Amino acid sequence: MTTVRVLTSDVAPATGWDTVTLMAELLADVLEAELVRVPVQWATGRSARAVSLLRRRRGSDITVLIAPDPGRLYDVAHWRGLLHPSAVTVGWVIDSFWTDRIPRVAGTHFDHLFVTDTEVVEEWRAATGVPVTCLPFGADVLRRGSSRHERTVDVQRVGRQPAAWEVDDRTTAEAAGRGLVMRGRVPFGTSADGNQRHLMAAMADTKFTLSFSNAVSPAPYTHPTREYLTGRWTDALASGAVVAGVPPDCAVAAELLWPGATLHLPPEDLHAGLAILEDAANAWSPAQAERNHAMALRRLDWRWRFAQLAEIVGVQTPTLRRELESLSGSIDASAGALD
Image (cartoon, rainbow, N blue to C red):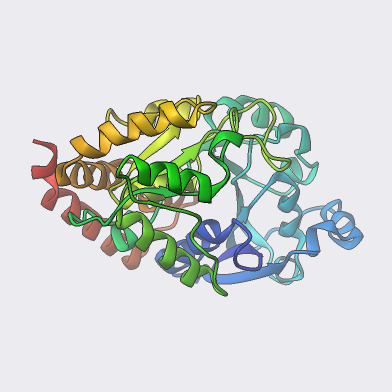
């Protein structure tokens, strides 16, 4: 019997990778796979790089590696993989836009690679010589999403902001002057699941979340030129909220997002932005939450990505089939929101 193994970096909670950690856990569940948490220091050690240079051994297992960034593809050399070599090994790179960091192991130890950005597919193919498919960032819309009508908050901050929007006390006070209820950062907890529950609950209680693309809200850890879709958009839409700010200018966002999913705000002008939010909040209706949740089920749920990955690696499980049936049932039930 073929064993399926999902490898994921053992990143501590509250680091920004909680959504990816939970995605890997969900993937292991639906593929009925063994979940292996690789210590974060593994890929930075000399042993991982040395082992990755060895000739690849083949076995009967299937390994799916979830890599936060290209360098974590070295996790394929983890001792568990050495003891149980795989017939099929695939890697799913989340921050795939770092194409200048593609390691040699990507072309020697993988049969297929998945990236989250359409624009970099050809670069990865050229650099590795293996098939590459785009699997965009998603959300657990089915289990964690919401179409809730009653929302006590107008605007919820999520993540980094441009300078004009960065100071929560100032933004909250000026929003209150316009009759808007605004909430600052959602505090982190001590577990990935707990953090995600708090975040999704906050998003389900707000009409708008506040997020800006890295092009107008850069940080040392963001790409300086390439924009990309992340969980700040997908989780918010799964929760029925509209994402206000500046959406990423990228192919995945253009393909997956829909009219009404986002609200553009000037990143450099807090006063003008709050005026736009005031008008939008006054015009908001529960139908917007229903529509966003319904569209997120159709376009953003992780299970659609899992089904595509499973087909490529040649795995089908009763759990994945049941999850897709539940997802289809929820989509049917939400059809009225799109009328």
